[in-house]
Length: 205
Image (cartoon, rainbow, N blue to C red; front, side, top):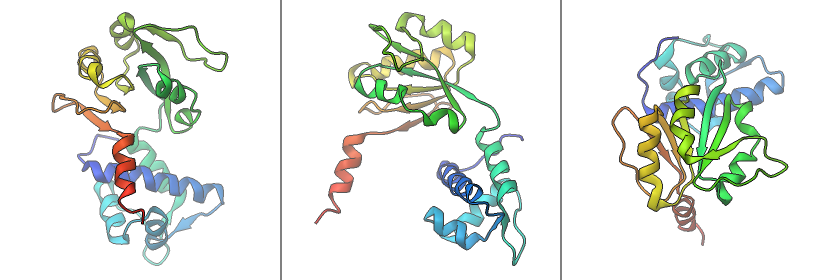
């Protein structure tokens, strides 16, 4: 399927719709209405229908969406029809925890290697190779990796991001508590855990 220009917020919601559809498939549900799917995803049905029209017309009036067909189409749009290689940079406490997470592959992503300035011997439960940071450029180019997870200190995040982009990475999931300056054709999603907790604390009474 050719790449479609879809707003980033809509792409984010597509991932949520996909997880809802996967749960329906597990429960052997064949069709779902836009209202029911929107409710499960936590959005309005008008928003759901608008998001889906970016890549086609789906559903039958009075019947709803075919769960298998819609899930397959969204998976193709999101690139789940192939295993996407990913590298992780920064094998500290957070990086090590992410390497132990088993859910990436199930969602279509494979962490093929991790890099650190001082690579340590792998733990018994780690099967992913931890390589020296000096080998990162050649590894990314050789394996045509386009995605990276960044879990390095804020002081070195920009420098490492620059190296990733130079090697060919086009998308970065940034866990470093800093804003990265990247070219327009590179996508960065930042996850600042402290900011998220601070935001949640506002609602505590």
